[in-house]
Image (cartoon, rainbow over all chains, first blue to last red):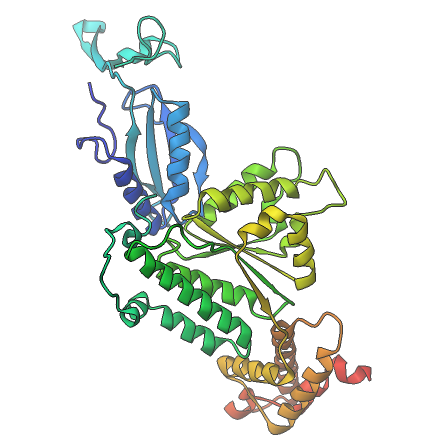
Length: 148
Length: 302
């Protein structure tokens, strides 16, 4: 199941050229870019790992694309997103955030029913990937990365 | 990146003659050159060199259009000259020229000194230098007093590491960054002599001559006009004398010294007006008198 989080998530994955243009757009708006990654795809997982520090005072997308290439090399089978932060007073929030890398195989989520007191039912979302410990979540049965 | 210079990537328009004037107009480089002429007094050799470089770069673009160019011209430069001779200003304009001709994508100037590039302990230098390179990507990196990077007397100095990373960046990311090294002429020469790798990658060496007394007077006038001040005739004479004397003193920093002298004259003018008290006319507020300049230490010393 394809994870849809952030901007452009219902579009096909962006090409590097398109990512570069989006980054350039953010930089021209004065939004510093940071790169984050995770292997926990739960939609409420807001704490992704930071890939180095946010890149302040950068004027061109090229060095950010270099960093992204490094992040992809280190975490090929994890989710990586680009975050653009608008620091202006009154906004001070993420202005643009989109996924730029995803595992080769995304197993998706299951719905879990929970019987509670008084025959009430609770529902929660559980990523199949989270059944395994960190770092092994997107590997095949043999422990090696998926090859397809 | 491939989309840096679309005109370079475009299909060669071989066998067609190109309109040089139109290309020059389209690039709007003329405007920048005119601005350099207007903003900077004197510096004729510098202006000539910049014009030559701009022409070379434009011709190279045209050669690329007809499929003649083999590789981009080397762009890294070295600006030598004493303090206050306009190196930073010219570097800013150079960044603009390179941007308009499509050699750098953004055309901003990032100024760095040894402190910004060299770290304090092992493993600190590389991230620092790379950080600065990231900031300068797509523009011009201006390294002021570049010779401080290299300290041969201390073999454990991390400056050499910074130079190495700079060299890599200058070599690999040709489209991304242009580096301008700046500093005193003699010290830059030793710096380049002891770093042959750098020397071979820096194509243009531009030397900034000291200003003459006349030029400094013109600069002072331009500065005052920009600040809405005027000199009365006595002050004008005094300023001329001041410049003559100041030029022969140690630590003379050309235009910067003139700016500082004017700032001090403004201070004295303000004090004088205050001591006088009462009503002041706009005329008085605008005028710097002879005494404001004559009170300088320069005159009392002799």
